[in-house]
Image 1 (cartoon, protein in one colour):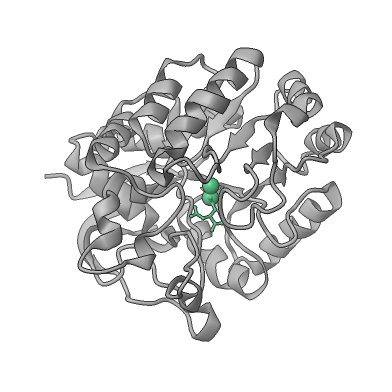
Image 2 (spheres, protein in one colour; image 1 turned 90 degrees about the vertical axis):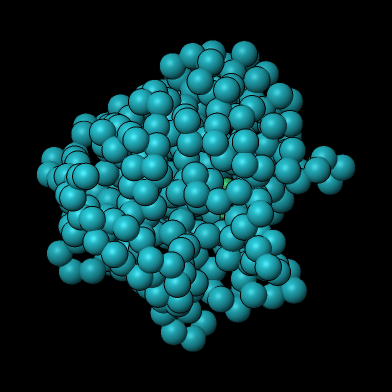
Length: 345
Ligand code: NCD
Ligand code: ZN
Ligand code: ZN
């Protein structure tokens, strides 16, 4: 049995670091495990301008613990009014590395998102031309589509035509949860990739109703049936360069989760690698964790691989029931459970 696992320093290709006090409370967890992270722009107000993203990046750097070696990779939130010239300007200067497409009202802080992707022609042409990735929350928002079908319907109605119309556009379908999404990405060309979260590898939709309503298992896209979880697992451990680590760590204060209308989002940053290691071990694929966590994403984004390594050791770790105090108290993924791998550093 393997007792220690050392891999190249990994990156998180999808994280919500939030802002203000919550940013200061959570940034250290991501910086502890990951060298770089793609930081989502769904703040209030959303990050839509070069000036806003530069200021947000500075706030992230200021929030990091002393001595942290962590690079936030910033993103631009697309709206119906996004200006292709501003996007290209920020890309050329290095202010942001990708654009994020939230269908309007699909998820947390997406009210300013895109109402009709057909209105984005000039933006999409620009992204394709300059080689800037488009990151997608891939769910339709039609209320007549069952919530468990929203990703599969998005793939068919929106993503497939998009890939057809913009064959050179670099696309990351974020936090994939279904057989349909995994199959689409696997069979698309090399410009189409996907991130995979720990929760979608570890829980199915039963977790939402396990003995009662479980708000801390609720995120979007919502966890699906077991057969979908197994398909997502197969993709993660397949060794395919199209699938890479993106935690979608999305902290919300306990009071905002345990409410009549609880927020979507799972805070998994404190034990992210431990969760992924469990999955890869269960699948007999620990030798493929490094590709998934530390290589595929960097190659897709055209960035160098990180120097240095991190180590996990086989040791029981009990996950706290809560992290933080007062309004900043957050329930982490795996709260109260004991995990088999421990992140050493
Ligand atoms: C994310 C959040 O809270 O910002 N929530 C979630 O359930 N995943 C938004 C998102 O990634 O869709
Ligand atoms: Zn999302
Ligand atoms: Zn997210």
